[in-house]
Structures are given as C-alpha cells and as structure tokens.
Image (cartoon, rainbow, N blue to C red; front, side, top):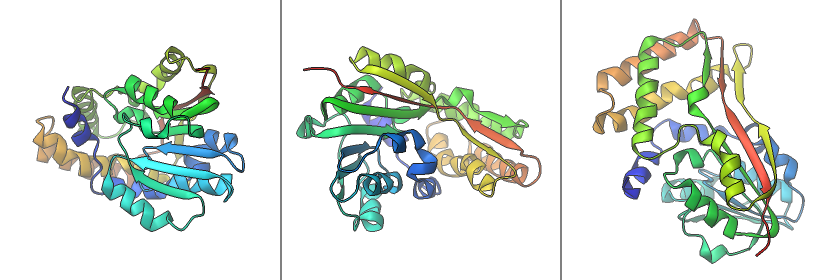
Length: 271
C-alpha cells in the first residue's frame, strides 16, 4: 500500500475534528493519567488538537515538559491556538515514522487512537521507542474496531456502512484489530514489564453525553463517507442513509455502545 494513500485516508475532516476537542486526559486516557508525575518529560504522538496533551502538561506541571506531535499542520495549528499558553507545553508537525531528532529525550512516550490509523505500526513503534530514555516508559492505547458492540443493533444502513468502513480501512493497510496486537508488538520491540489494561469506551442512555458519544458514527458517515465514496467503497446515497437512519435511532432506540479498547504500557530496555 502506498504510504501516501494511508495518510490521505487517515486525514480528519468535517465533524470528526470536534471529537478531538471534546476529549480529556481523565475521560479519554485514564490509564495514562495514573502514570504521570510532576517534572516528567512526555511525548504525545498523534496529539490531534491537543486536548489530552494539555491534560498531560497540567499533570506534570510547569517543571515538566510535554511535546505534542501530529502529521497534520491544521490540527497542530488548532492545538497551538487552543493550548499554546500552557507552561511547558509545545506542539510540532512531525512524521511519527521519523523521530530521530528526539532520540532518548523523554521519560514517557504515549499515543492513543493513533496506531489504528497507521499502515506500518511496527515502524512507528520503533521510532517512538527511540524517543524514550533507557528505562523510560511507553504507553499505547487503541481500539479493536471489529469488537464494537451496540445495544440493540443499529439500523441496517449503518451496519452496511460500518462493514464498508472496515473494508476501506483495511484496503489502506490499517489493522482494524490493532488493540489486541499491541502486547505482542511491544514485546517484539523489547519492551519489558508489559501491563495490559482494558479501557473500553462504554456509554448508556442514562449518561448525559450519550448522544454525543454514540453520535461519532453518524459523524463518521458524514465525514468519512465522501472519502469512501471517492474510493469506491460506498455511495453518496448509502452514507447519507446511514447517517440519517443512525441519528434517528439515537433519538429512539439506541440504549448502549461499547468500543473495545486496550492500553498497554512497559519499560524500554537497555541500549
């Protein structure tokens, strides 16, 4: 698969960028929050618009240093606008595969919801580990999109769209089940003292943010649908129907959703 195709398909558009702004360290990456200490140096790869990265910087305090990186200049610019005034926090446009400039600079390197959008996860992991000081920590969190569970099942139009979405992603070289591969990937790179935590994202109708959380798939149909149609994996009519029917289902029918996610951490070994 052409690396450029993977980059094009991973690029965020439309309403999905709002999802990034709504995240927080405590809600969206609680296992990472447990590892942070004042004064740490941290690299947050695939930081998007910087919402989680800001939380990291606030946790390590002004005596620490946090760098958020992303391949999208537009997302980094927004991150700087929203969070550039936080002490010790900076952002940079970087390719996650090319991080030699940061060799052994960080106590902790982390990435959440990034590897599911990488066609070469082993190469990215090696680059990220290179930025960790010997004896430092790495934590990666991501989804297995094949294990999503809705209660009850969503409309048929969304089921059809979601199946096409997984095929479109796989065609670009993305691993839909990357979460369950993370422990083996880290072990193969020599990461020691591996710990695996379930971090499933679950929401029920009783929660105040229920519609916003489940609505990510309507936003996906709206934002990714045109990309998928251009690539021949859906049609304008199909992704429009998926969005319409799913939004109606959210109002009257949807009860719960679980997105399967694992967080995996460990220690970088010797030189």
